[in-house]
Amino acid sequence: MLEELLTTKLKTVTPQAFPLKAPEKVTGAHLIYQRTGTARETHLDGPGGIAVVNFRVDCYQTSYSKTNALADALRASCDGWREGDVLYCSVDNDIDFGAEPDADGYYRRSLELRVTYRES
Image 1 (cartoon, rainbow, N blue to C red):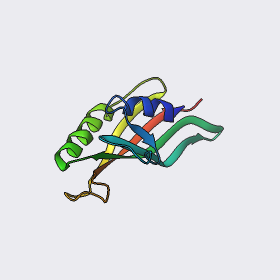
Image 2 (cartoon, rainbow, N blue to C red; image 1 turned 90 degrees about the vertical axis):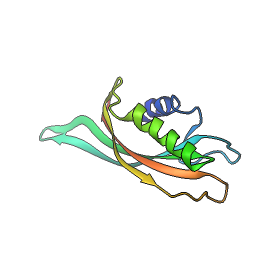
Image 3 (cartoon, one colour; image 1 turned 45 degrees about the vertical axis):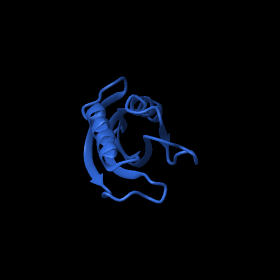
Image 4 (spheres, one colour; image 1 turned 30 degrees about the vertical axis):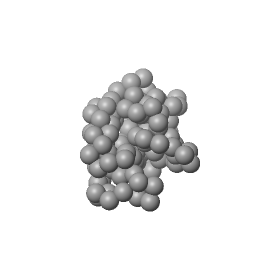
């Protein structure tokens, strides 16, 4: 399953990688990811078995510079990633949410990943 492969990949960047939302008392560097869309290849005779799946990965850290370093590590790890049924991954967008922390004291930067995946 693609989400399992992605979670394993994200945990090479930081061990705290969570789908949809982080646990309430998370501390330190963490990633939150969400599937934002899927396009499936089709042929005249039916499904092609290839999907292009978009994910947003939010990077959180306790300072602006640490957040940027975390996001840069994520980009370096995922851009060009190929493994098993992951045919290719690209980083299509990089969004900086500014130099002010949120209410919990975390800074945020988001990367949008496009993963071309062979569905079974």
